[in-house]
Length: 234
Image 1 (tube, rainbow, N blue to C red):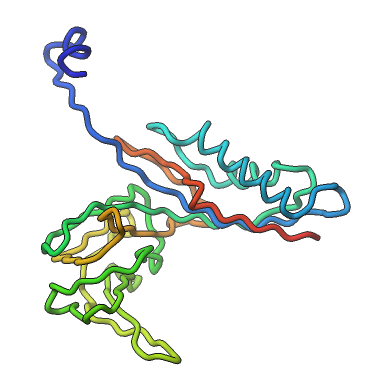
Image 2: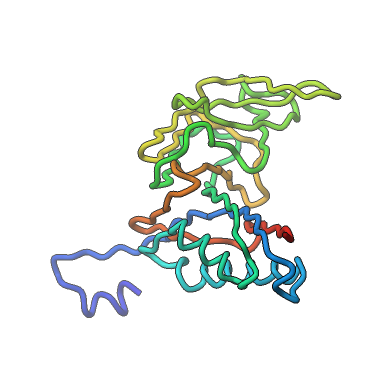
């Protein structure tokens, strides 16, 4: 593309660069209430209408550079999926999938480009770190969170009948809540997702009323697998 297309029309003083886009996945959990007496639709039908509206919003408003997610617009779209819908309670979280090098100690920087709500950082899937002398707990699954003070912690669960949290590393990295940047130090996973990515989930700073923006080469998108809709009849 650079040599056959862009070079022919490019201004000499500008050097173009093609980069892969980064994705911020928006995870949606929505509970809607509808008036069953004002419609012939059942709960399953309303659920389908809402899911369809969310997918349409993703296709027409998101999934391209420079788009923003507007919470009020999004929740209104759910309310307007059918006249019988009275209202909804919707939670939106952000997820990034980070490619990692297994069994190698590296520093990773995850930039959400939006302010993060303190205490909301977590990994979506458990991981293992059998080659990390500090974290090696055999085949035990590991998880991370933040302490609301800017520190990333790694823990596992101990016990059988009643499982309790056991923190193994209280300084595994840092999180800047204002800028949305998470840093993992000396991160040495041995097992992550099947696609060798590590998924981190956070809540936006104003997760109940706030908007989510995309910058530079980042695209906001909603995967159908990340949409959970439940419906209650009133």
